[in-house]
Length: 325
Image (cartoon, rainbow, N blue to C red):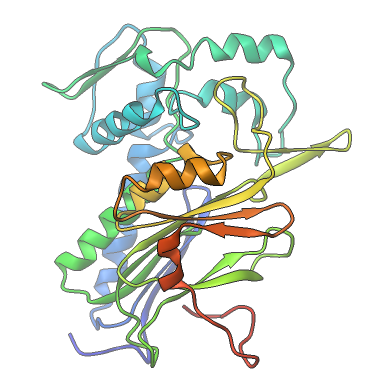
């Protein structure tokens, strides 16, 4: 396909509870936008826990003491999620707790201790029984539900990137509600860099504390400022502690993971949220393709050593945010 960076193909839709923006810079066949949108709806029909027509919704409703055969995509993501949910801030069985709080919805509330203790009994990932031979799943306890909200966007973003690569797209950016994947280089920019800004948690969206050049990689941020509500002068955010059922208490405002695969960014932003910098650095030293950036409530920043090569220096004429990538 001929270069199209002066008139890129764009998809902007609201789905999966977020705004999705995809821009393709080197492709002329507009049909690819419809195909990508169809793929997004396809994955939403698999991973949504709120859509009554979705596969995960059906699993949650019928899997107690009943083996439910599921698609490869749903089985694979639940298998990944279960593995990383043991003794972790990531827990795909946290749905009963999430549903009590309903943070991000108009009926959010602070549940009482009795409700939380009861729901916590339904959040043991070892109570998910996976049968890889026939891709079936069973829940050992009545009332269990799986929530893949901490993983699905990363999995889907990787799948969309794979699809675009199969169509020989060489330059694109995929933004699933702040979960960003870049394909190739930014051919529409003289320096060929996709510029990604990290949100200042204390200012309105679009104000950045740090600017990064991320090419052919993923960047995922998890922040407690994204969804919250205030009651009796106390702010409750949406990142819940699976051990006690309450929002995690921390001075960490956000954690960002730079990785090759977006699913890895999803996993590690969840697993490492609220950990100390020392713990995060020690954990990520085991991996060659993972870097972390931590922003604290007072806007101080810490990051692992490999982040330095991604940081873009601003000159005095640079604006604090960009309208385009």
